[in-house]
Length: 527
Image (cartoon, rainbow, N blue to C red):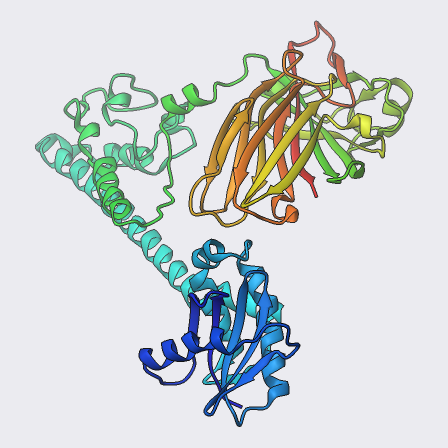
């Protein structure tokens, strides 16, 4: 069996795609394909035509012909099996079986033909295997990217070490410029500089201040602490800003980015910057109730999964506030099951709704202001099959009209929550350009890498409980627009859990506390 060529031609004889599997000239293949429409008769049931030298095995596909050109010694049964497999592959890669659709996916079809026929002989493959092979996932490419990223990380480490060495050499040079005084008290001052060099989160000179490699040297000279010699003077002002580490690092990373490399930078902000980005809570005690939502909705209506998992965490800044108990209200939802931490007094919680440790003399752990995780006190879970509990429902209506697919998507939000930063991600078939947006309530962005349309609504409240999106793409199957993923957050929660009071065990006035509530989506899909 030898397949000379596999082609797709129009009924008028126009060649759309042709793949040759043996050596032949262009004139010969064009002559063979040009002769085919004249040999096909009307009203015949046969799917092959023979000439003196070759055999044509063909199958009509709407207004086109899928054609195999073989020699006369080829096995006709195997040729028909090859033709049948190719006829299944063509609709998988070309969503519209016309000249325009075949022309847009010509290379994908040629690659698929190559997986089916090799040197004129049929390979033992299936449609699923051909699609997997054509995805071209390369283990060598992944390995190359890992090696490249490791080299970048090593280069960054080398730069950090060099910057540290330059900083130490400048400090040593400054000590040498002090002359005879440095030779007398070098031991004590050297230990002080060592404390400054290596401390990143501790307390330098016996205080609560943190000095790191990026701290200016003159910052501690203006506020001497501990037993620093009175005659020791600070280095010249501005020396700490002359390290040059950040500038050189950014120049090198910028050059790598200009060459198209993906750089993951380790950013360590200074103390002043971190306070601006995430200010510490003003209240000494903060309780955070957070719920994570896992929902799977059916595209035709109904709900297949609804699961809410919540946690109550405690954050204490000062150690003297650790001996406390927390009184809460559970709300009126009977479907929620609460579980306390193993160190909590379960009887006290079930009888009086008070969260306290089993050992009342043991304080709660304390953490820094930047530690937002806190200590877990309580967990709860709620599952339901009631569709009215869903905060946001999505309806998607794709319809094919001619050479276009019109997609209408509508959201309906429950009045239980005001949703913030809503992002609805709709998968799309592979497109050469962004879809044509006809109407939208909100903003949109097309992610060409992942072939996804992201529909964003900043806030959904009583003014916009419903909204719609309409766009047009080339012909596609309705399943290509699923699953739809949804992300949002809210400041209300299902459990309606409230912190009533914080009770100090040592007596005295109750300490100040703040309560935060947050509802986020962990996995929210329409399938």
